[in-house]
Image (tube, rainbow, N blue to C red):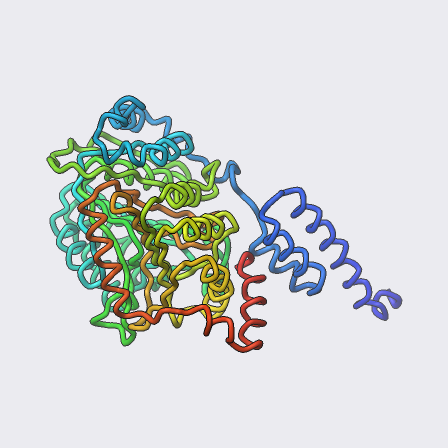
Amino acid sequence: MEYIREHIWQILIALNYILALSAVIAVLFKKINPTKTLSYIIVLLVFPFLGLIVYYLFGQEYRKSKIFNRKNVLNQSVVKQIQKELELDTKTIESVDELLEEKSKLIRLLYNSENSKVTIKNSVELIKDGDHKMELLFEDLRNAKHHIHIEYFIIKDDTIGSRFLDLICSKAEEGVQVKMIIDDVGSAISSKTKRKLNQSGVELYKFMPVLFSRFTGKMNYRDHRKIAIIDGNVGYVGGINISDNYINSKNKRYWRDTHIRVVGEAVRQLQILFFTTWDFVSDGKLNISKDHFPENQVEENVALQVAASGPDTDWSNIMEALFVAITNAEEYIYITTPYFIPNDEIVTALQVAARSNIEVKLIVPKVSDSWIAEYATNSYLEKLLEAGVEVYQYTKGFVHAKTIVIDGVFSTVGTANMDYRSFNINFEVNAFIYDKKFSESLKSDFKSDLMDTQQIHLETWVNRSRRKRLIEALARLAAPLL
């Protein structure tokens, strides 16, 4: 014992490196992205103890793990019947119209990797700020008759959040079935409010609860989706959470965001996706009926595919779909994202597109809500500028929209950022829309946002200080871990 006391630090250091070397071997066998692999190896070997903590919190890989199992939902007879009704074979896809033929390769990719059907009978409304979204959502919630399904990364019981929670409590008391999933890291609801929800009959579950949620803002495998479904007829998806931060009438800093309201067949896909998460958080307490999938009465024809990704999917569906969309572009690619920390595949695709005389424009925040994300984003811009990509920094406030519009025929709105976490770790959902009218609306919003940006020019960007370059390099190295 005396020897242990005298050499405690040497023993702890030796133990640390035994565990660190074991972790390094585990990382190498995972065959993950080389940049991410190198980042973990450096942290594990250079920073004793801290490296092990970082790896424990962020380094575990659960893709295909049994803890994220969708079979219980997908094997339900009601869900099987709904999927059969949504079935569109290859011949049908090619005969829908000329527009779908242009992007049929992308449609087939999502179908083959995630069994995601393209739906036709949809009406889609574009929403460009939180105030408008809440106005529409509250009206739909007030009109709910059978059920309300909520799955959000962030719900807070601040001013707008309390109004939302009070409303769903009142609907639950009226007899409407209300199911709500909140991410335990992103959301913040007081014990008093949770008791009120429970007493009102709202079924509330936390997604992957953690011990100290306030101090684990970047804990792995978070439910980053923002889904609302009302009576199986109306669905919402996009970047806008339920908090005062997203409401410009409550927020000192202007918040630019994008969401969509969907009525039609695509809501069925959102419903099935919600049930897969509900099955996980409720430990299989499912009661799916045909009432959750009412007959579609929409006459409009907006083709839409719901793409989901996360550790419960075999492939990085959203990233792969974006890669295919970019590499198949012929005229222009307009991207808006709050966090641009892409993998090598996306960077190369954008560089090749720009060098092929395709117009590529990217909007990112000038000042982010995360300093490390801001510096990591900046580390990628020089190579893009050299390839001819036009990069713009949003200056009016903070841009949180996650949108892409390509060639006036394809667009996407969703929850996925262009970063490692959205591509590989978090649970995300995007709507892929094949419609000229909707794409023109999104393109118009993009052009409008350009009025509130500063363009970055290569000749001035390369002259930024060495200090900034060093911080960017360090942030880029840490980005895959955060």
